[in-house]
Image (tube, rainbow, N blue to C red):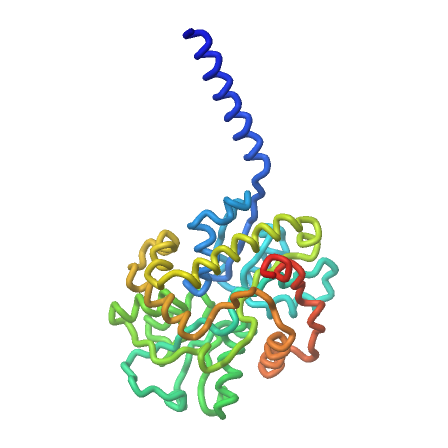
Length: 329
């Protein structure tokens, strides 16, 4: 009897061992480079922490680029398969004539995710308060800086005459520069904006995205060859994000904060909850992940306004919506 039981147990163990080996060979690894680490990208972190990528047999290795220019460099050099960044980079690379050009295959956010912070409390803040002031607005040529300048221009204020826009500080160094005394105002993403406000470092006075309106602010981008050769992986990647959006839209801000807290170990649950609430309030996320021609046209208007683009690029050269149309149908 013991021999029979031993034989049965050995067979079961062997079966599970072989099954495990088979599963591991099916797991696809995605090297993903994000432009920065922010609650603005909550759906991505929900998908990671809730195991949605694992359910699609995908392992995501996440790295921080610290700026869209660096994230695009990672994509072009092959150190990243997918990059999460501003789609202005796709326009720049297309105009360089690259054959295997990057394309947007899913849009995550649809407006500027930064908040304007001031050293002083301004409960009755108006954008006119910026006249004669210096603002840290981001890297020249990046979506944050261009969007902010476009918004000010629409409000009748121009760089060099009405305001001073400081484009000299690298994106990931802006917060420390502002804390160190540079400029009168700074644009900051969550959860940093709420975390430092609660610490008394500064005051959030306005949402840039609420004022500037909709644009394809942050998108998932991959080389055309990657999209062609890895269609099932891309579909699995987007399927995991769809589950994340379903979770985001069906749970409280507190529950969302609890689900992503491991991504922000030095940030309190309360600050994360506030950050999620702030982004939901301004309708920051593109729930169907579909990029629209109208929003890309506006983005290119913003780039032209910033003297970073001379002629618009056709929408179909920049975007491939086929995957999101299938997954989010």
